[in-house]
Image 1 (cartoon, one colour):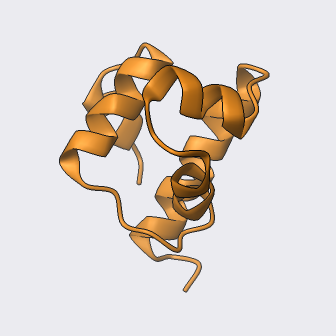
Image 2: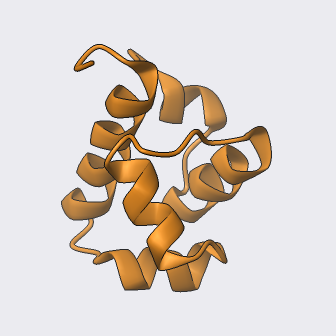
Length: 71
């Protein structure tokens, strides 16, 4: 299951968030995505739709392609 794309995306999201020194609550606040939803994404328990991916990319100040790079 470690190679599952949802798990890999979750690792990427956590890395981007922690590199910025943000907690999940702050990311939830600036993205408009619920904190529980973010937690589920980071833990690979939830699939991200296109709108959510775009909201996250905008929140991190990166392109969608950069968000998904190397997954």
